[in-house]
Image (cartoon, rainbow, N blue to C red; front, side):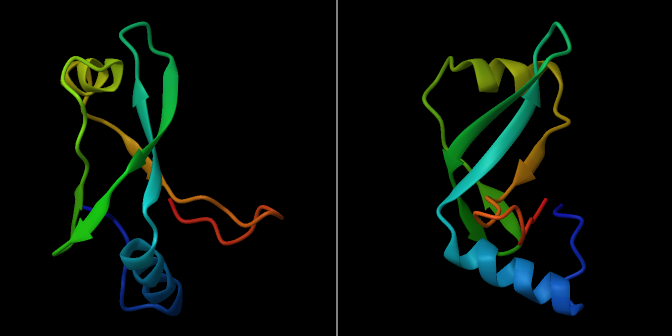
Amino acid sequence: MSGIDFSSDTGRHALERLQREQIIWLTTVSPQGRPQSSPVWFLWRDGTFVIYSQPNMPKLKAIRGNDHVSLNLNSSETGEDVVI
């Protein structure tokens, strides 16, 4: 679940970016409690983030240990247009 209200102006803008962008930042938490952000390719399909990964990658181990993650789109060069 994305947690974004797509009926608002901000939500509609976020949806447009989700449909257009190819890279999203995935933040997981290591077993030691450290956040780790990684750029990943993704698809936005039918309200779901689709992310593929090679097996045995650290981010998969982190997700198996703690499925609370954050996804963030890149901001503009001046730090605006943030989508979390």
